[in-house]
Image 1 (cartoon, helix red, strand yellow):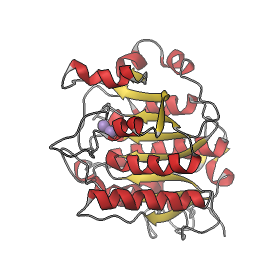
Image 2 (cartoon, helix red, strand yellow):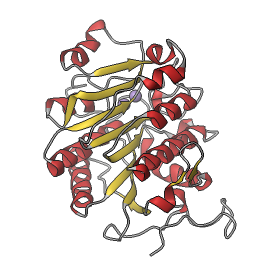
Image 3 (cartoon, helix red, strand yellow):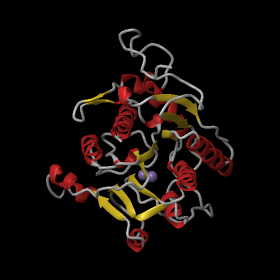
Image 4 (spheres, protein in one colour):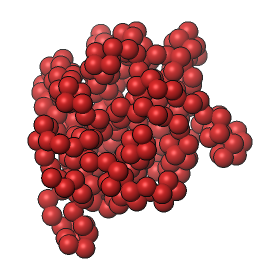
Length: 310
Ligand code: MN
Ligand code: MN
């Protein structure tokens, strides 16, 4: 089986059935290295819903994606056998059932020794992914979390599991190692100064937009922590970007990163053992020009490049 994107010359990029990066759509057991799949669920959102529609929109706009990384000098689709493995099963009326389905699905992938890139969905989907990874690797993961928000908030309306609480559960359940955890893109306003207590208590490295902008970007990226061989996971909440670059999201926060800044950060991260990544919180209903989806596709390209270089 050839795991190559359908050529834009054979079939124009606006044509053909939409899959991620125009890659073949194959069953989960096929002989690929990296499975790209959707998680069409937004049962954890606290504000504007609609991220369940993102996998479909991202598939469409990933048609514009190409394989050769200019600055890395690598063609990801020659280095990696990547495939669209469809969508993870979900239950639109139950977040509990959906979380179980996501954990089971990712566990199945890991048993097959696959790496993966998941396209949500809202950020509550990341918790069951991390549960499956921790079980599989038998150790807490190193974790890079792009977000405007801390996502370490308490229960909301009496419900533990929502998109603003996944990172707290991930630390409390021992799924990630907080001393090897990086949050990037943080900014206010916060509900209260105590919002920062969790990150401080657990010694999480919290990088605000001010930190990124304090000096020259080239100097900032040189100071990024170096990740060792610990299995490492990246979760990219699209609202790390400024709403000017990513308006299509449920809880936008002004004063965010530019697409270029996140590209440079991703290109300078040293991650020898990236085992998976996700892209979450794209909300197509608020993305009339589709730039949010395109920014998401760009993250996917960088994440696949990191995997290709491993
Ligand atoms: Mn988030
Ligand atoms: Mn967020």
